[in-house]
Image (cartoon, rainbow, N blue to C red; front, side):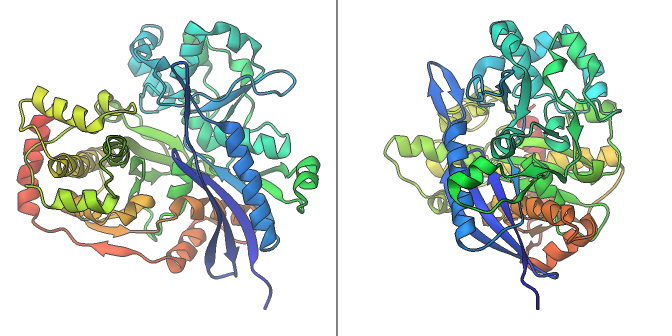
Length: 490
């Protein structure tokens, strides 16, 4: 029996990163985490940055630890979307990439609409409007720091920037490019209409390459420094959402997924994008995926609300575990108040519990006082937001879906999975937890010719991973509460 084919996936989230070896024996993918590290943003004089050099140091540690347990054939990197680094003509990074939660884009969406009307903008790109999108970050640079743009020779999104540090190759992968809201939904190339309307420099963008392209090898200098063998570097689906979608363990062509993590991505996979008045009104996105597919989905603030609330309480000396918060939520009375998780005040770091209380007071609802009441409000509001999004996606696609596939780290949150099933009145199949990593690995295996196509990849993943099933309960109560949620968040 031949040895398994081994690849190395680096998966970067908004708060941590991992290096995981995927071993494929022809039937099953086995995961081995060799390195885990924090991804802590750094605020300097009012600007929030990513510590990208520290992240590259952690990549080196991951390479060393992976090499210590055996040879791997390729490396792939996925990260969050929209953020980027700027390189000068010599290939040097001009400054650390700015964090998408930085305030520099505040108010610029409406300003951009005066130059490029909202409907035209959406029909050109098919992407959900969010202040944090790359296009508005560039618009902020044009307005506040034009001298930095003038010095820039190339813009690289985060996974492409880290791959550049590994290989010296400057590439732009398709899935991560589409998160920018700078790509034409029709041509799948950079949109001249967006660049010209907003006065942004198109010449700093390189040609877009397909997901799954082998872009080069680990550089000789890096291999010599670390004392490791070289390996291919594959431009996987660089956007972590698209990596996760690649790993949805569904045998059905039409499926609904909820990629649950710091952000919740709720949607389906389509062969062609949907761009119409309904999708514009619901502000849904058409992101590029593997082999040019479309992730038709809504970005929703997700476990961030729970994570940041916990950080706020811990800063004040109240050290709650996630299990504590779930227990306290379960002990609180249901359906007393709701928030809109996507209200803009919930995006920045800070006092989320205080903002929850403020939202409820402003909308004339019961104001939660205890930790349990606040957590119950957050949990139920997320589940209701999923129901609202589910209804709108069904309207757009003219399809119904019997099962919701919950993937990613949020599958460990039993309470939220149960509430999602109850609110949406659908069976929830939760798993795999490591969907993003498995998608990253699957694209590397397809690039190497070890897996034939995405259908085979999904079948292999479904047979490699465990799935937990939740059936809806108390649907009448949730249906009535959903009406209250809609009335309270409008």
